[in-house]
Amino acid sequence: MKLIFHPLFLKHELSGHPEKPERLSLLKLDNCVEAQNGEKYLSLAHEAGYIEKIKSLSRGTPAGSGPPHKEPGKAVYLDADTYINGDTYEAACYAAGAAVQAADIGGFALTRPPGHHAPYGGFCIFNNMAIAVKASGKRTFIIDWDAHHGNGTEALLKNDKNVMYFSTHQVPLYPGTGLRSEGNCLNVPLDAGTGDEDYLRVVEEKLRPALEAFQPEIVAVSAGFDSYCKDAGWLTDLQLTQKSYKAVCKAIARYKVFFVLEGGYNPESVKDGVETVINQFV
Ligand SMILES: [Zn+2]
Image (cartoon, rainbow, N blue to C red; front, side):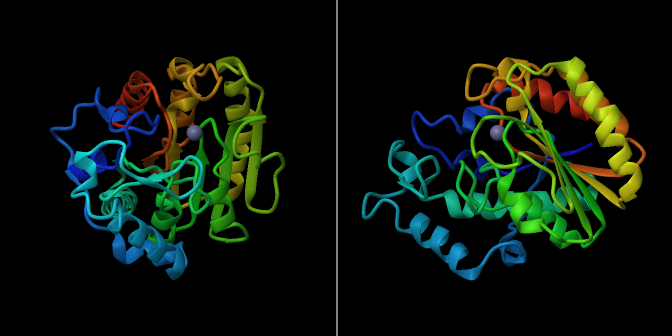
């Protein structure tokens, strides 16, 4: 499985913010497929006014002080948690493009900024997953194993008969959604401290039957590694190890698959997590 990356992903930054380029710093990035610009796909998931807002906030930031990414700390906020610097719009366009490519080639898109809360903030700019799913047009089963509920993905794909959204997430935790299942959205809330034993049970008792019932053409994973044990205590408190991610990979092995990076704030979590996935699909 190929990683998909673009150097622009490292230009979206704000000094001191947990959603930082260093998240990718322990990955080997020399053999990646280069991401392409996904600007033309944004409107598959987002309204024109939202796209324009991100573009103008990014292009105008900060007024008259040169390339903002060269001056960490200079950015504006979309909401209380979500920053936008002068490179954010372009980085986010390429992140969306990377997700579309991942669906196309069965790869792993190392998307920064991440996407599953978009358009509702939460460190996210464009919803890379929803864009990739809409662009592919395939019957898609999405698994979101990030520690947070993907409220943006759920809202954008709700009632889409071509899509099933299956999310496991810690509760209570930001954004506070995903407490129950509805229509094509299967939500499995997890208590803080949940580890492999409980997670493996969810894979066997809930994920596998749902996959079997839906019969997807393709399975997409919103791969956030803030559910990993090495991220516990950063922003979240789950205790999954590589065992849990491997169990999901095994459950989806017979399908065409692709992965899109979401959270994971300890660089070691992202490294261990991405490597686990890659090693399951060699
Ligand atoms: Zn998260």
